Image (cartoon, rainbow over all chains, first blue to last red; front, top):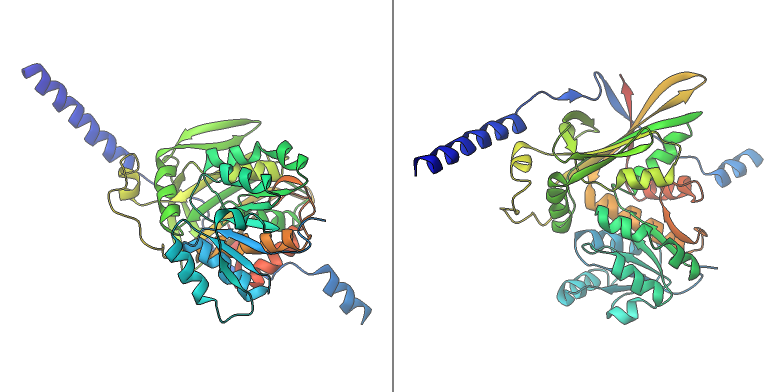
Length: 54
Length: 332
């Protein structure tokens, strides 16, 4: 009985430690500084051609 | 010619399916054949669009296959459905983001070619929009060798379930000539998404993007895909979903970071989109279906958005015209 209790306790502690390690920790930032700017849609070759002809 | 006439079929009247129908109705007058196991949901969606120029009819499974192209916007698996649609002579646009399902769809290449039809795999947000953005960014490089995708948010309930599964599954990444499998939920990286979403911690997950981006641009040497998650998501990833998913996730976002060379220098370009994920998926799926229907995609067999044989710039332009705003990250 004592053995089972010890095994369960060890498994429990290991589970809690594993869970803490999993949910805590430091992020690796993908980018350091900067910002987002709107991007224009890709040009339409047909429209470009037409505007060049005009 | 593929899809010169006829209707466009949509299977799925959920959150993403309704966005597909909405976009088709808004941008074309092609008749739409709608099918869903939930007949009431399909009829309700058709009724919403009754007054518009395009006719939305609720039909059975056999009838939806008479369309020139069928959009699969239902929960996975899509491979068996695609097989049945192709057997009845329709081209297929699948919005699946489930890795085994996507692999099964890609395996159907020879079968689709034999039927002289088109099967577009992963025409949603991630994958789908990511392929279009990769193709768009590629024009800024002489040569590209890395692509890193990050996604925040979910579409409808099926998408939320897929997000939950993805964090418990094995992520697939392409790394210097071999596929690396890593546990989902590992590899934390803080990724900045376009405003109003901002920064979120993202983790490896079982996402289909690396497989499809590698297929689109085989020269890539490193491809990774991450998804945002909070502590509860990661802690409960291996358990069944404890709380039923929301009807629709909030504001989502995706970004793709492409690395390569221009004029001999190593450069990085990042593009992103902030919008509800189902809206992105719906607009990309509907636009792709329209291109197949009009015969503007002439490639037969299985294909993925971003591959050179597709008119990616034109598809992206139409997607952006559909209200999706593209952003570029400027900084380091």
